[in-house]
Image 1 (tube, rainbow, N blue to C red):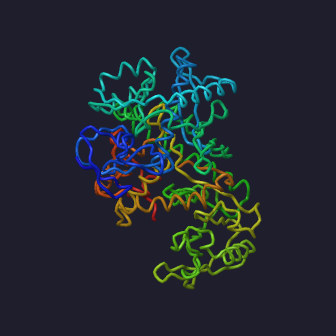
Image 2: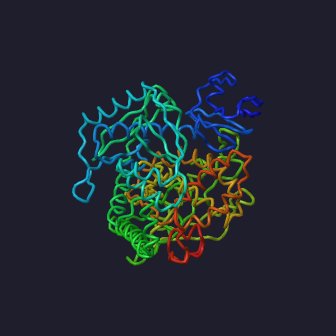
Image 3: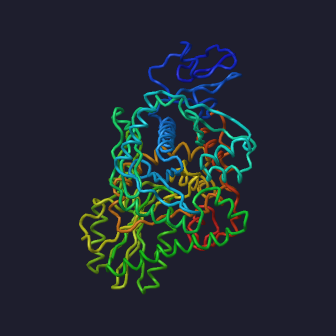
Length: 555
């Protein structure tokens, strides 16, 4: 059979049952890098994947976005192996991404409850040392596909109860899992051929657990160093505790809530949690006497609805909110900075007229009347219209935009007048104890649905644009998130069950012959784990309505 090697733009001949790895081992394919996985017909696969018909193969390095995820899965499995040896009856939970790594805790069973186990620094060092031994031993990650009913007893024996519940609620006939030196686990994506593919990692003690750090792509011989994100960590911790209280930590437990007809109560509690958070932020703004509220966050974090709900809460405190859009402060298009590709960089801080913005805000705080600018995206320049604004003693300005936390934005305004809010969908619902749900994937699904419904943009175009959006966030948003006075977690524990019905038909429109199909296929497989939650149970004030429609707010 003939196989097309995309990396080399050529066909090679192979026997039936050959794998991408065997083509490398026998010299049929030679590459200038060591691949960690591959795309087969634009689906991510393990390098040992057997091929029995003509296919297209693209080999990927560990430094690609897809390869990075494969590398992280490998070190997670190695960590689980080390924990299972040191704490045979305990549970490892890899809870969420933070500090450029992954926060982990070990739980032990006391009667009918699992409580966090206090792990010493020496024990964490021992876990890391054992992981290093596993890497040096170059043990295979063996892929298996079996009847789901056949693997449930093994998962129960290993205390992987969250996986058992997931399998029982998804109803899949067959399940793919991996073994490492006899230990079974499942990861919802490919793993490398063996432990030797993941030689660099680190564990750092933190709070009542530790941080698992992956390889630094800029310094491959070193692990990444944890970044300071104490405010983000608190936001994650608050919601993780909330999940534990309402007994919905993972997809299996969410699916059980749907089947036991408890989802309406779950929705009410989650929405009340949002309202309580926003009310608390409003109270702090009033107590501080702030006159300007800067609200920032990455794409599809729900900034617009958060602004509107915050305005309502401020009005209940007899404060009048007034809105200013940073979009109206764009410089003329021909003065917009260019990005590394030569395109206009509208996400740059310097795409804004900072001098005009600072002047207008200073004058407003001094009690003057200011004629606000109006930017025309059609003509690519500012159009002066009658748009006067004057602030009274009970007024507060709310300014929404991605640069709200950047200290350069309004450097001429005193810090005592400003209150900063960071908004992001910090997803704390897990797939299971060893697989978290990516906050980025949650936001991407929101954006795919919103762009299709309201901007007539296909999922293909949204996915194609997403890497550029992410680069802008990494440069202009994430470095400043710890500057916030408050962090609002806009995720809703039930939202992916609602989003499923809207996202699946749009994702299925992505053609198989484009690279973006990998993301569409991965998201479709992920959404299969969720029971559908009817949208008519979502209140009109819900932040989720910003993406699905039916909101009582005007956008």
